[in-house]
Length: 426
Ligand SMILES: Cc1cc2nc3c(=O)[nH]c(=O)nc-3n(C[C@H](O)[C@H](O)[C@H](O)COP(=O)(O)OP(=O)(O)OC[C@H]3O[C@@H](n4cnc5c(N)ncnc54)[C@H](O)[C@@H]3O)c2cc1C
Image (cartoon, rainbow, N blue to C red):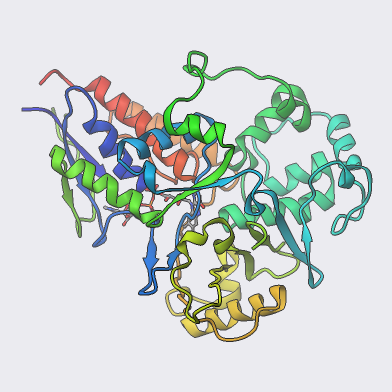
């Protein structure tokens, strides 16, 4: 009898863990326990009768880096290569991002001009922020909020406009509460290693174990590099990745159980013209930003509601860490209130009035873990506890070390490798 590995949670992390466990030469028996009635977790795509695809979770995955390449390798093995919708780096959705401030949209700085001259919404040339980073001594504390870190290294404008908005866009969170060490490890390490974020990012740094032997990426990842993809999605929406994983693991003997919440653990002796725009919290705490879904993935637009008039899909991100103060209890909030707010934003920011042909309101409660100050320390404590208690338990998923789909899949793969290495011979 092969040993049994239980995977808890059928989101992308759990499904990817099942996939990697079952690809082993001598796979264990895998049982997946999912609390809800479906697999995929936050990978949620709605296809309307017109064939439009609305994403309620991730809408695009970055192909860069070892984790991006690993995800693409999995996508290819799942037979989804033909369904990839890639956004090249010279596409407007990759090149242009905006900030909405003072009642107007401002392109985020790129190129040399904003470095040398003040370009709104930044009151000073970014050269001053760069100089400040080069001259400020490195920090000494074990962790710091993303806001404090950006303010110390680059000055108040970058902290309050750029980093505040970025945290709202990526984590739906408050840059004053989120940990720079856990949310932006590359920036934290750059400062630690070189005494300057800009120098640390520009100069070569230590190669992670295992990376040194990796040659140029092959297959889909090689295509992504050659064609300079900035992000990708799938023709059927991101949820089709979850469906493909279910289709891969089911016939390989995985036992997939829905409506099966894990309630306790017992010890067993033995084993637009752009991507979208973000809104800083000083402008409007309730409104995180707007994603111009149709620009990156027009293939998801479906048949126009009015023949001859192109459809436009937008996602208005509301609430995040400010949900309760803005809208009250998320379990009780009236969807009409959120829809009114979203329509007002689309009208005020983008000048799009009128009734949308279709609107879907989804409250994604507690959907992105908030790595607040001291997150790294809590992780270390948990890992120490697991080790001391010799618990046969691996922790994967967005709650620990990275919320992106790539991070989740990479942590699932690493855990699967550790489990496979520790299993007794059948
Ligand atoms: C709105 C939104 C937009 C995003 N956009 C992007 C993006 O564009 N690009 C990107 O890379 N990332 C994005 N992310 C982040 C990424 O999608 C998530 O971090 C990732 O999908 C989380 O996957 P997971 O499997 O770790 O967790 P989840 O998706 O939360 O899955 C966990 C699963 O475990 C189940 N479960 C919970 N408790 C139990 C229990 N006790 N017993 C059994 N089952 C249980 C849940 O029902 C769920 O199905 C976005 C996230 C959200 C919410």
